[in-house]
Image (cartoon, rainbow, N blue to C red; front, side, top):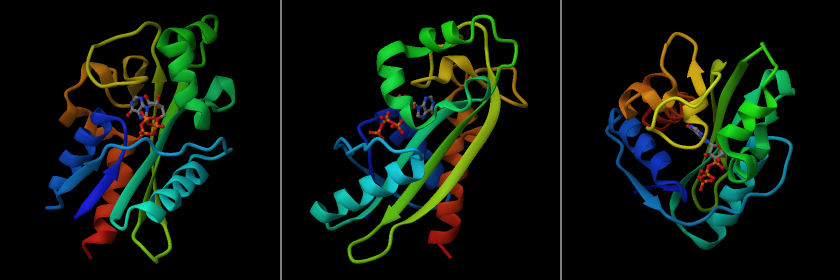
Amino acid sequence: MLYLVTSNLNKFNEAKLILEEYRLTLQRLPIEKLEIQADTIQDISEYATKVILEQNKKEILVEDAGLFIDALNGFPGPYSSYIYKTIRCEGILNLLKSETKRTASFKAVLSYGRPKNEVISFLGEIKGQIVYSVRGSGGFGFDPIFKPNGSNKTFAEMSISQKNQFSHRMQALKQFAEWYVQ
Ligand code: ITT
């Protein structure tokens, strides 16, 4: 059985749907991952995976994601969780108030581990734009302000399956699934 360790039910629901396409059944381990402060989301994800594996003798997936805004030199990036909790989408829009360069990307590092084995990670990335005001009520986190390239809708204006056609999460999970089922 494969477990995604996440406190975020939306993240789990997206991932479950994606892995079903590969006939993989995902369960959720609803524990808070230990999120260290590090410069890369890969370090955060892999460290959390190792810590969880010490206490849970299971096959696990951990994902750390972040929003990287070009005009802010990649901020909030690895600090996305803290920034979302403190200034939300509105705070990001404020930081970009007089900025015309709106390009950004969402990245996700998905780490897979099982007891006594090396942790292996997969990176997913989607490029897009930060819109000028919050749009939509679906999704979670920064979804209302991020519009992927190739769409007129923000992630929050999409259904889960529409978001799953573009997302950083889908790209990381797709790579994992193709590696895992081979
Ligand atoms: P877990 O760490 O428990 O899995 P989390 O919600 O804290 O859940 P992350 O640390 O991976 O997830 O995410 C960092 C921040 O980025 C967090 O505030 C999320 O809301 C946001 N985020 C991650 N993926 C996102 C997505 O697909 N759409 C919008 N925001 C996202």
